[in-house]
Length: 328
Image (cartoon, rainbow, N blue to C red; front, top):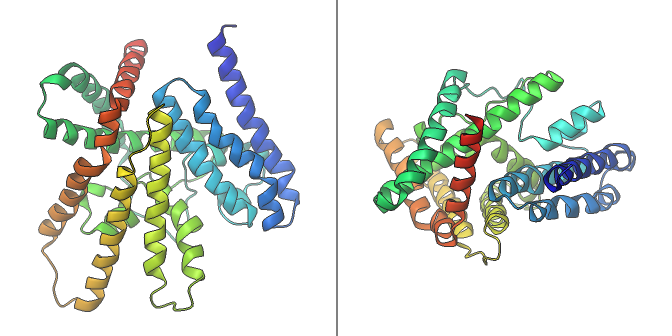
């Protein structure tokens, strides 16, 4: 076996052993602080995993799947909450922990995006990758950023779509769709809370929003700091993903500012809705244009610049292009 094959074996063996320990050892402890302490070695292991990977894209995926989502699921597991608490076998525990999926709830059934759209996305994604790789130097900077926005949307949808297929095939459970047509959002609350990347939204709701909301005595306004805290944590986690991908580059905090800005704007939006109480509403078309436009413009300003300045976008594009060439 060559070095790459050995590293792959070590990588997956580490994940298997870490999650087996969580399932067989940590699960036997009473919920709360002792169970959480028993999981500290796993949190550390999943936090350094991306640093052991040379590929920028693979490092980002590992950070998203394990450093962020799996660790947060294990935090919920420590308090007998979340999807891992309801698993009934080791294989189910490992799959639910490893993939960015959300089990289908009878009480929460958002409209599904037709699976045909996702197959179309699978076709469009490599075409855009090849186009931007070959034409990057000739593109208008704003057009380049617009294509990057499309790529991020497609990539998140495709990753979670593939995860859903694998999870459903392996353990036969019904899963929520990855997103709900975010380009049709009529407000920032609608975009972040009900449409975009529903797996992350649900994870932040369970691990940050609800706990923060519960500690404030004034329940009428407890949602305000809870929303801001959720966006701050999301910003910090995206900053961490940037750190893993952009090796030897100090995070600029711009991604954190992006999510903090959106958190504050969501709070202002909700306060305005309460003040106006349905007395004034924008036409749906206008509200959609303003919402999506705000997300796109602020991402041009704060989200993408650090990736471009560090050269992380070029590394990921090159890796995607090589992967597509090998695949076809």
